[in-house]
Amino acid sequence: MYICLDAAYESSAGLACGVIFDSTKSQKPIKVITGSRLKVRPYVPGRFYERELPLLLNVLKRVEEDLNIIFIDGYVWLPGNRPGLGAHLFKNLNEKIPVVGIAKNPFKGHRECLKVYRGKSSRPLFITSAGISIKAAAELVEKLYGQNRVPLMVTLSHIMARNALDERLTRHQPG
Image (cartoon, rainbow, N blue to C red; front, side, top):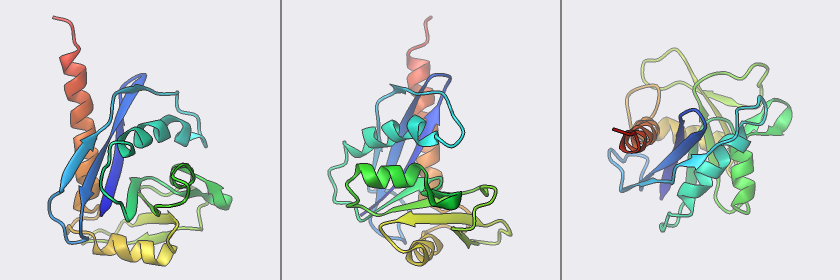
């Protein structure tokens, strides 16, 4: 089983969503899990994991399935082999479940990632990993379903997190 995790934020709170699927060819998820809305720390450059990691862990504690790979929207490793969000997630999971980072934007000076070109896009995805070789991680990302640059399940996890946060904010609006 695989899961794509992504988070959405409003000013001081956020939540994450996980899309569980069973094959790189999956066109729809087996299950979607939404975490609780949590207070988040302010964004600090180089310490993004402090903001997003609690949200991702909140989703993962609700997962009943045995996961083989976790895909995140972001980097596992930062330039200079510094741990990013994915490395901190991998460590928090006792290094038992490999984490693959799929970043849509380059991180200045990052040379320890592999570029994957999908669909007809001339813009790459930037792949980093922990618990699985970077080459195997890049091959998995290439195989994920979808004809666009960003794999369908990655896109879906983003949409589901944003929609869940919007829904919770709307529900708690006065009036």
